[in-house]
Length: 223
Image (cartoon, rainbow, N blue to C red; front, side, top):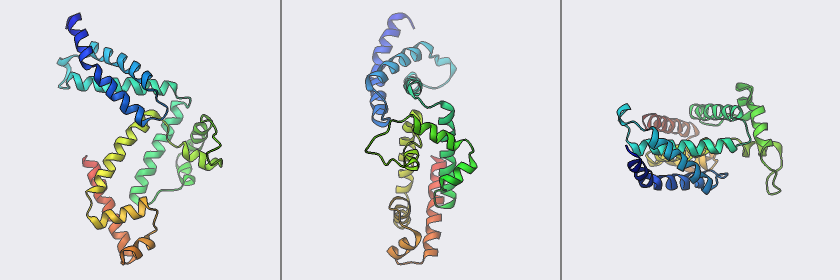
C-alpha cells in the first residue's frame, strides 16, 4: 500500500489500541493506561508495516490485535523489576500446581512444590523482595510470598481469560456437580462437610467431585 493508504489504515485501526489498552489496564494492576496506548500505537504501526496478506489467512485486524497486545505486554515486562527467569519458574510451577490439583482434587502444598521445583523458593523470594512493604499487609513471610505468587503481566492478563474459560466449564456442569465444586473449591468445605450439606456419604461426594473434575478437564481440553 502507498503512504496515504498506510496512514489511513493506521487511523482506522487506532481504536483497537485504546480498546486493548483499557482491557490490559483493568486487569494488570501496575499498568498505566497512557503508556499502554503509546506502546500499543507503536505496535500498530509495526503491524501495519509488516503485514503481508500473502503469508497466511489471518486478517489485518486480527494481526494488529495480536501485535498491539504483544507490544503492551512486552513494555510491562521491561518495567518489571523481577527477572524473566524467576517469572518463568513461577509460571511453570503454577501450571504444575493447577494440573496436580485437577488430578488429586486439592492443591499440593508449597513445600511439595518447592521439592518438585528446586528454583521455586528463590523465585518466590525474589518476587517478594521487589514488592514494597505495606502496613496493611500480613507481614509474615509466607503470606507475602503467597501474595506475590504470580505477577508477570502476561500471566495476569491471561489468567483472566483462563479463569473465564474455567468458570464457563463449571457452569456447564449438572447442578449437583456444580454445587459440589462450588462448596469444595470455592467455599472451602471439606468432603465431610459437603456430604452433610447434601445428605450423602463422603465417598459418594468424592466420586461426584472426581466426575465433575473430569468433565471440566474434558471441556477445557476441547476449548
